[in-house]
Image (cartoon, rainbow, N blue to C red; front, side, top):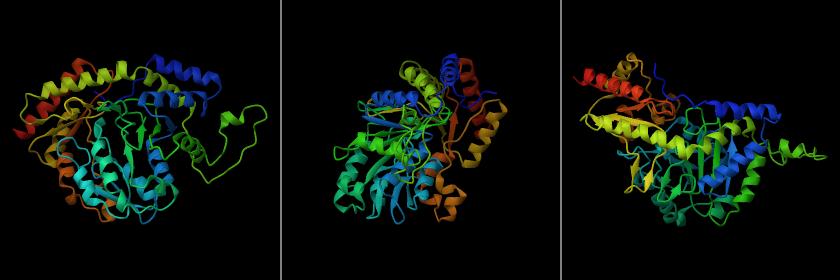
Amino acid sequence: MIPFSPPRIDQKIIDAVTETLRSGWITTGPRTKLFEKKLADYLGVKHVLCLNSATAGLEIMLRWFGVEKGDEVILPAYTYTATANVIIHCGATPVFVDVNPGDFNISVSAIEKAITPRTKVIMPVDFAGLPCDYEAINALVRKHAATFVARGEEQQKLGRMLVLADAAHSIGAISKGKRSGALTDLSVFSFHAVKNLTTGEGGAIALNLPAAFDNAQLYAKLCVTTLHGQNKDALAKMQKGNWRYDIVEAGYKCNMPDLLAAIGLIELERYDTDTLIRRRHIFDLYAFAFSHSAWAQIPIYEKDHAQTFSSYHVFPLRIKGITEVQRDEIIRLIFEEDVSVNVHFIPVPMMSFYKKLGYDIKNYPVAFDNYSREISLPVYYDLTAEQIQQIVDAVSGAVKKVLG
């Protein structure tokens, strides 16, 4: 069976984890801090905070910005549920909008129509690794700054809606000379096991707030917030005579341990020179193979006249002119050929919890159309040319059987 997206676990990773275990320091410590520094340098931002998940990063930043009951946060209907759940956790209201028919990303015109005096945050999602149109989104929040209703110190300081990018898929992506992470106010990455750059579990917040904010000061504050509100981490407490600490707020437990950061350091070291090159090659092979099929809609992974590049995270192939039921049958037939595929994603308004809140997928026709025809193909480092051909044959054969 060809798996969908296994992590790359080679000897370098095993050696890095073993070395960390033998060091006697496995919780947050020197490796995590080094990983943060290297990530910041890579992304082109001043500060990065590593956490135990991207979900934690999104929620922490919503809470930092003072998002609460009565507030609204705009996000695409086409995303994973984590993007919406964190808004619910804060007591705020998710305002779903539709996406683009071409690249799956949030529609800027739909964002503008959804803005109200209660809107505090826009959360674009870089679907499959392709950055959203942050130039347009950043311009939009500036355009509507005069009608922004600020509450609390951070909102007053920013003076407009916050742009909080769900960049879970897009580390390494580039748009017009800037990497994902440096494209807007705040960006949150995922290092989950299936991501391009993994730490097993984990995430990171890239701090890129404008000059009114001291990003270094915010990083220090967030280190406290994400470790129970404790004003010293374990590494600081272990210094001679430095055992005493204080709790300065009722914080959370979201820190990334060194054991995971050790994996991330290896992954980051070879990311541009190896991982992304391999993933781009796989995307190109799929694109070429299906370009001769009239039924295939090839995903966009490069745009703006080659100024914007994906991170090649998910290859979301769409089948033209089919129904959701036909798509599901195609997937069943593909699995019969020992090929694992997936669907990214079932739109959040289709989920039971959100349907009970009154959301209806009929209000997001593009999102539903994209979902109903989408099949995500395997993309991972060790995928061979022979396996890629097997996948192409399985998909093509299944589509032919269903469409006749």
